[in-house]
Image (cartoon, rainbow, N blue to C red; front, side, top):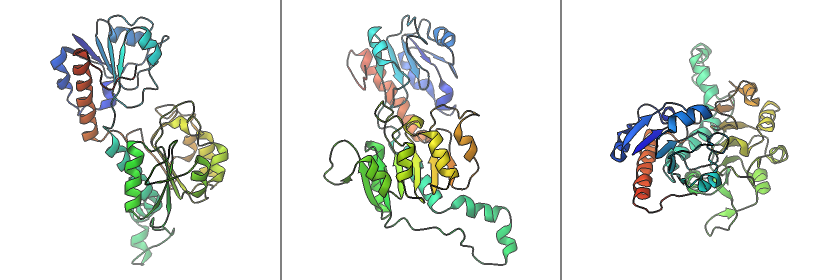
Length: 316
């Protein structure tokens, strides 16, 4: 059997792919960018392992011998699942592997922005502290999180983990989700925006969630609120988010995901790069080393189960 890892670079070169060799010959490609490359890299392969490669009738009109696509992520918005089903191709994702990694970055962003760490770090790095003659420096003021309201938009594994940490920090936790929870205060999205001091986003990208943090909802947020998006870029109106930062209608912004990746030169966030109250990272929240190891192990389990004629993590 032949397997192709189509965008190994997204998994980083410190990850050992030899785990996959139990299934057959592994063909490694750092990136697969075009339909022509997808056709060439998948030729003669039974299993495709991919992260960001788009699979649909336009990018992959001739699916050839492919029987299984394994996505090294939870979200499958890059895959036309109905198309794969029509071509007899099974599609598997991985679930829960990155919960701790994404939650950790969410908390790190919130703490950094709430404590104004970039500003204070620069004060020391540039020698201003040394020259000041003062033993301490407390401008700009920062505030404790205890007693603040942390809003969680999307309460899956990651949202629940962030909520637990927020609660441990002494925050009141609000949750926006479709169904009630016995142990959480559940509100609608507008109330979440209005009451949150920190609002972190953990929803998948669907037609319902696309643009859910809109211009109107941004205007409902507190002027000093911190907004963190570690879900998908398109769940926010990115132009409106950038304008909210520039017009001082947001206290802080942490973003790890973008509607177009990597961040293009024409993206509205280019106008807020370098601001002390903005923390932009390169879609790395999911990728702690341990999380990537778990991800690859999950992929191997998915392949093993498929070959046994059983279903595991199937989304088709």
